Amino acid sequence: MAQSFTEENYLKHIYKLSRKSDKGVSTNALAERLETKASSVTDMIKKLAAKKLVDYKKYQGVTLTNKGLKIAVDIIRKHRLWEVFLLEHLGFGGTEVHEVAEELEHINSPELVERLDKFLGYPKYDPHGGPIPDNKGVFPAPARVRLNELETGKKTKVMGIAEHSNAFLAHLKKLGLELGQEFLLKERFDFDHSVEIELNDKTIQLSHDVAKNIFVAY
Amino acid sequence: MAQSFTEENYLKHIYKLSRKSDKGVSTNALAERLETKASSVTDMIKKLAAKKLVDYKKYQGVTLTNKGLKIAVDIIRKHRLWEVFLLEHLGFGGTEVHEVAEELEHINSPELVERLDKFLGYPKYDPHGGPIPDNKGVFPAPARVRLNELETGKKTKVMGIAEHSNAFLAHLKKLGLELGQEFLLKERFDFDHSVEIELNDKTIQLSHDVAKNIFVAY
DNA sequence: ACTGATATTTAGATAAGTCTAAAAATAGAT
DNA sequence: ATCTATTTTTAGACTTATCTAAATATCAGT
Image (cartoon, rainbow over all chains, first blue to last red; front, side, top):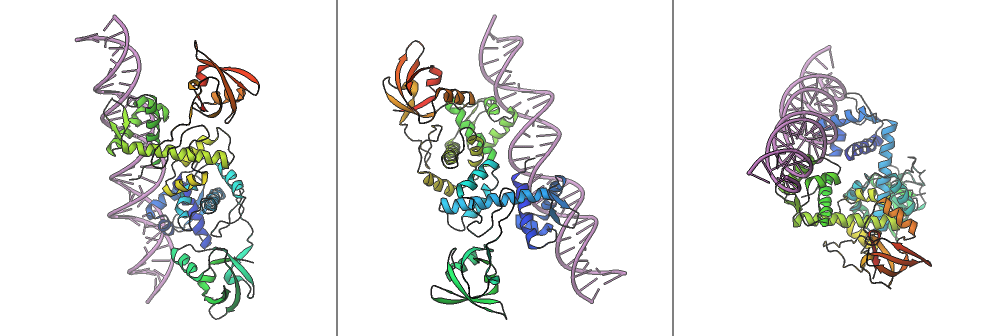
């Protein structure tokens, strides 16, 4: 039972939104994400429910079934593998990659994905730090943590980010916090959870909002 | 003005069929190629004509406009570049590649294509010997020729094939005529245009039908 | 020039995914 | 507990690409 491009996108975004809270995903939230109308979302949700890819009760939001979850995770896998390819082998820059990967993730060939995974050396994280599930849908155990959770006094490095807005990317760039950048976590201030780090002989402050969106090695 | 997956396929197949004869491509021929019905083809042709991608007069078949030709050639370019990638870098086998490339050829990102082309080393032919047009749509001048056109007495090697049926591929394999295989063209027999070649110390005969579908270096 | 066979087009229907506008359900405030 | 604002669903329509069945045009042979 093959899924259409559109169905796959719905499943993927239901998955992503469901990570943010443990309630069902609301129709409006999905509509906004998918840049479509709530009525369209309702229609599609019914279709996905008929295919047993989501559980749905009117007015209650949707959740993925195991079947739907499997498909969603596989899309994530493909997306992130392609991103690794685009960034590490084709030399794409940071932000241009995303929309191309949005297309490539829907290419339907399990063999292609396996071969690509092998070609890339079975990477566990994409260049943004997103974990890449294996072909069983299992995510790697994180050898990394959010900067707001790291113990002070540790030397570490930027492994990825949890927030991909252009504003955030630009901010990090300005701070010199590129992917792979090493630095020392000097102190955490309890009253606002901001942190102080040292990199390239400069000491800088990061707000809690920034720190919690940076993945670092531990 | 972006083309849909389906429109691109129509354009590609119109292009390929129009190579075989210099008349317009017939509705039925297209229907057979695309595994659809003649009536569907008529509808789509009208749509393409409205977009000025084909010239069309009722009952007279279709031909590509310059605009349509450009798109068709670009699809071929993408298809063949992806085939190079799949075969040379991902280790795919000969025949499994085609349907994956059929999907990849519709990924819409000029930058991706340029970067892929560069990554692959600007190949001029795909692994089947198909010439790869450059980003202006220009095909490479062939440094190769069909075996039935080569002068006798020449040492040469298999550069590609013009026929991709499984039967033909199996036949070549059995003869030991893999891609890249070197051999000597010993003789051509005028009465049936069959040829005699020597490879790996064996002398074998090839019919005209076989010879004309093998591209060789010259 | 006619006739039968074949190729092509038209007309009307269907399915997927979307929309607008209106109706119905829910949640929050009092 | 009720009212109001918000969210969600329904109903009906539109677009794309397809189909079947029927109508029409072209072609080849006489």
